[in-house]
Image 1 (cartoon, rainbow, N blue to C red):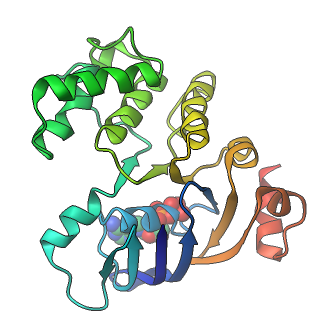
Image 2 (cartoon, rainbow, N blue to C red):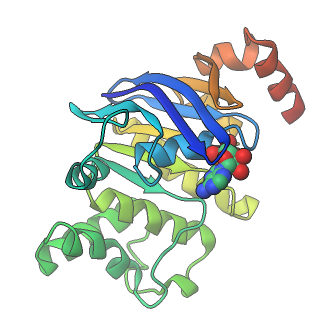
Image 3 (tube, helix red, strand yellow):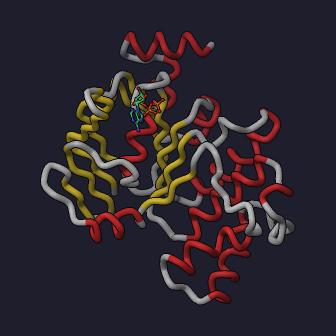
Length: 244
Ligand code: ADP
């Protein structure tokens, strides 16, 4: 489903991704862990082409962007639609209601009819447990509710893959669970997901595979069971020990 080959990203002199190779199967949930600054967010942003990789290639569902050659802008636009991104901060439009936030993308980007978009947005908000909050403005919602609107908004574009960049890091601890629950439900429905998170419990319970990144490379990848109970690499072990 996803294939990343030799992905490099440099910001000026700083080489942030130093050759990432990764294959992700359809329907699998990959959790990415690693110290701050190791390149986790940059990797996700490259998948969504919010950052342009310096070299390497990414394929998703048969569409390939090879950054070692020049890449056409129109190819980037259609490629970007394959993935939905959920950010740490929700970036909702403050002057639009929950349902308007979810409808916006399909109407503007896909040219969907308003009533169709509204119906779908309502179903998605019900799915994330916000059926009662369709007409609330972001300021009237808790952080956890806003993030669930963020998830519904990403789903409204009908992506093939969902990318989550520390979706619960900005939340008060008591609100983390409701967002993780929505993510777990999505995983169980068979959505292909790549999740950068510090929530090790989520990784244990929902991941098919855990990837440990450090200094711009994938140091180790394995089942959660293996990574958490018997990591092979010293760097992984050190990182996990620090968390305890
Ligand atoms: P992580 O998600 O693992 O914390 P990031 O991918 O956010 O790591 O960052 C990796 C490195 O890239 C950090 O040193 C960060 O400062 C740097 N970096 C990220 N984005 C930019 C940018 N737009 N310009 C310059 N440096 C950046």
